[in-house]
Amino acid sequence: MKVSELKDYLSKGVVMVVQITPFAIDESLDLAALKDNTIFLIEQTKHDQLALIPLGSTGEFYAVNFEEYKKIVDTVVDASNGKVPVIVGSAQAGTKLTIEYAKYAQDAGADGVQIVLPYYSIPSEEGLFLHYKKICEAIDIGVVIYNNPDASKIYMKPHILRRLIEECDNIVAIKENTPFIPTLYKHVIVSGNKVPVYQGRGEWWYAATALLGVKGFVSSYANFMPKICLDLLEAGRQCNISKLKEYMELLRPLDEFIGYIGEKYGPSTTIMPYPYSQDNLYISVVKASMNILGLGGGFSRLPLINLMQEDIEKLKDILFNKLKLKKYE
Image (cartoon, rainbow, N blue to C red; front, top):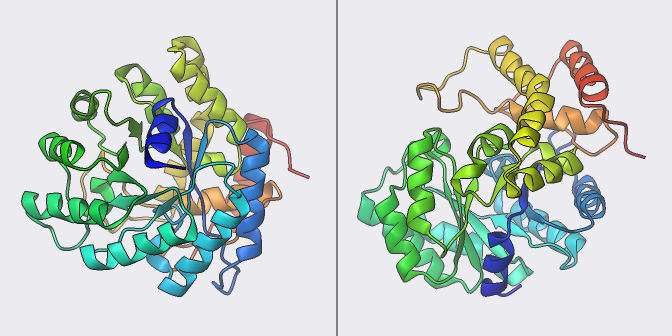
């Protein structure tokens, strides 16, 4: 998909599925499960209003080496077979290494790359601008800017985004993770009609901010309930407030369960204040949900930990009795 086509596609609104990376109990990579999961998503959604993002935060990109990265990219690109856009999480802490990863994604046939803010180094505003500008200049595919202060401990302010949009034609979307709604709205205003802004914090936040002009949302839940996520997207596109509230209520037991897991398996080691994310245990919940429903969720790699059996039983009750999901055949 050409850059202009990808930008147009994302501007209409899609669910960006941040795919999990399935690992076996011994932490080895399960590529067969990844292939099956990719095909499942395409078939369940009839490859409509969907984009796949392997190797994002949910995909534990930080826990795989370059050889595994290449295998994951190849698997998802091959399994998708051009039916839906594949936007590969290719960010590393440094610019040069990120370009190396992004070039591999391009050569493998990916439609775009997702680049999270450069973590660890805490660059100046000019350094942050040049980081993205150099990446955009080095590749010919689309770039999704992942503005995630939770993971990087830095933030791209609207005036930097404006410069990048003006100077880099292959920026196709902004994945915005701020927990502050006025800041989110400022990014929507700055991007105008040039680049779509996506709600990066998931379903509840999309329902709460759809009226502000975000085009869609990034979803980990879609790994195991894509149809519900597409219905939520449509409610937002239609500005159907009653439907949005209905889906917020439907998903509340699962959202609360993730909060419960964070407290039970805590305390967290983050120094970030609330309302920033306090942990990433939602990944273990998503993987356990997939396993329960007959999909290839697998397990997480350390330092993330997996759910205990007693909590898996509680999760089963939510999936089958609250969300009314059924095991996939």
